[in-house]
Amino acid sequence: MSSSVTDKAVKNVLNYALWVGAASPKYSNVVLSHVFKIYNDYIRANGFKLTRENLIEDFGTRPEDVDPFIEILGGPKAMVPTLNSLAPLIPILPHPGNIPIIVPLFCVFTVMTSLAVGLRLWSRQKVAGGIRSFDWLAVVGFGLTVVYGGLAVYHSKVSGPHQAFYDRTWDQLKENYKVYLILTIIYPFIMCIIKISLLLFYYRVATLNYVQWAVYATGFVTIANSIAAIFTHCLSYRPIDYWNHFFEEPFKLNTRVPLLVFGSVYILTDVAIWIIPMPMVFQLKLYPREKIIAVITFSLGAVACVASGFRIWAIDEFQIYTAKNTSTLMIDAWTMIELNLTLICASAPAIRALAIHYAPKILSTLPSAFTSSGATGGSKGVASSGKSKTPESEKSMQDVDSPILPKEVV
Image: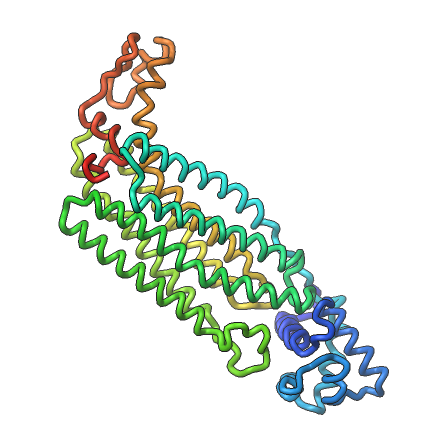
């Protein structure tokens, strides 16, 4: 950034870019910095005069928007000097670019999550005897997560390579607002589905009353938080297509605080879902090593908690536009990471059960030099005849998609 331009001046130009774009429908497909120049040239050509009729006829300003626009520019006397001051600033203003991170994240996580969910379904069908309702709910969550990722990719394309408002067209900004609103509204719905699928799984396997009550409480908080988030985001914009009514007051409310609150509640439910299965895991009669592995498997949810924390940071950092940040793509990025990691972690127990189920069969096909090394979990090795010797506790775990899951409820 040039030393001659302060952060306050940059923020003022960013705000003026929005107002000029909304007030100039005839140039909605022109980069706003060029629209500044158009105003500058027009005012000079007309003897440094600009009237209400000029705005309506030559810039396409809606009659009901003319007076608010003039007021924002400082009134009739300050309007011309304000508009004239914008174009000369463009060469010395910063022109930050958007980080091209959305597409790579979408591709990588779609492949990883597809593999995890696919292995989960295979495990449920092969080991647990069938796919249950909570598995299908997770599949729905996965499908919606892919939809979110696809919309985020479109959001990145709409935003273009430039971040600052004055480096984009008004058409780009309107589409950006539209897509971001959709992403903000569908996120709580997707998160609710994924969490409820996990809670239903825990409820079916729970044998302790306080665990069942914990599932009820966490589920209630999750559903209530999601409903509140959806309605808040829908009602925070009046009218909801505020990009077409930019001069109406109040045209929208600042949603940063609600986003931070709802995100924080989701982190609390993440922690609860991470803790809920632990009492049942510790009750298992397993070898110490097997118990540690089981705890680690169910503790993978902590990774999703970390991603949720980074999403909160991104909202706090990028939801309010400043002289240095005018893009919400980093919020999209961390939301994609959070949703995908939640699904992957939720599939970990089933993937582990599948590995336990096939490990003896795979090891029995290896040369005796490998199988005699004690590689099988909990037993000394695999006999050269191909028959494995496995502890009774581990055998019971091979028949289910989780070490805590009784076979009759799978």
